[in-house]
Image: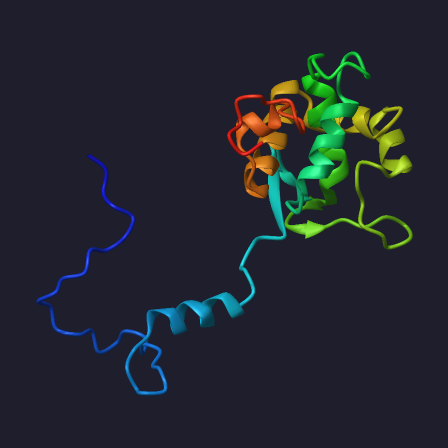
Amino acid sequence: MSEPVWDEPDEFAAPDPDAAPKHKTESGLPSIYAAFRAELQKPADLPKDIVLRVPGRESLAVRYSVDLPLDKLHRWQKAARKKKNDPTSQIDTMHFNLTVLQEQCISLVFNGEDVTDKEDEPLTFKNEAFQEQLGALDARGAIKEFYVRDPYVLRASADILTAAGYSQDDANGFAEGEDEDDPLD
């Protein structure tokens, strides 16, 4: 049996003197609703990016954005379909995952520091000089050369999607309107 993720209140326990003060109404009585409203006024504390180490390359990592709206994910899924105009067509998994890495890359990282190019711009997989250095023809080829093995590409993409808040089903291609069993549609 798993432990609950919340603490059950002990109605007989003495008040915790270190606890944050409860919000009070105009009458001076505590109000959970007032505290709730105050919490809603605060900005959400969500990560903007993640840094993923590159397997087999201990000093190298990549900084990826985890800000990924659903409409963008749907466009990438549609573009990765094996038959472009057929919504029932399977998604080319590698094409989709390479797109995630290419489009969400903020910067390559070396020994904990973001790398910049000659123009002092963040170095990404889209940088043509970097692509040439790896012997790649485009950003997708550079990603494959950089990660060396396909499973590492898939793992990095899954980590980005998870950090962005998506589930494995989302990443597997439930594009808009396709999941007929979805009770929210």
